[in-house]
Length: 110
Image 1: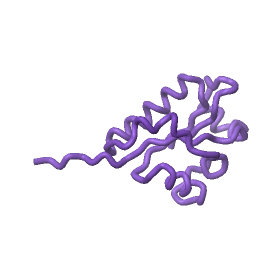
Image 2: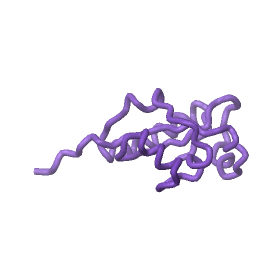
Image 3: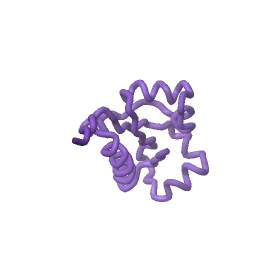
């Protein structure tokens, strides 16, 4: 009998400082960015999102945009989805990034 996957993974969203817009790579990834919308990083983790954010800021398995420009988590954008299985989190990370881009956010995903 196959093992049932455990719901212990999370998607999370980090608000990034406006200065991230000065980075050409970030700008090129967001051609439809709407002025005034937040800049965010969307990720997934097997850790509590607060712990994962702290690791980014400390440079541990960090995304460079989060390490340099990460301000804080935006739980209103992700809390309702968590926790979930690894596979669901992997898919939700992509779907959430797409939805936020469609809403005009500047989005970065690993």
